[in-house]
Length: 183
Image (cartoon, rainbow, N blue to C red):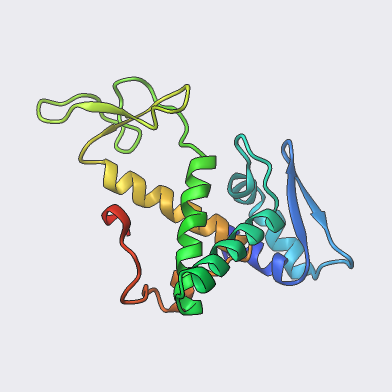
């Protein structure tokens, strides 16, 4: 069991989790099963990292509300089947999570992905320049780095109980929009 699975199990049993400093705060109507408490203790550091807020303080309910809103808009206004609407809503949540949880800064001139500096054919350029501190990457490392960040976002959202595309067999619907070739 990993941190995301522990969070998902806690969520399914009605346990709401939040972060206060370095503490993981549990809110439940009744005592959670020992199995869940032990899993939360065992994965506390990873859970704190998954739930850590940057500049936002969105709760599980906030994420579920934005997911439901996006899915409903796609289904009713966009006339998409519910499964496709949920896939699109999840994609919106992934992008929102990435925006709200910018990558940590790296040393100027050193790629955050591979750790190397400028090489003869590979220059290191800043990424996420809308933040005060920049993340530096080689252009060839960008895809791997972005895929890892996206996976982290999907794990965090899945841990909050949002439906993931992977839970539907890992396949996006055939006519799922491919905005800017990012899917």
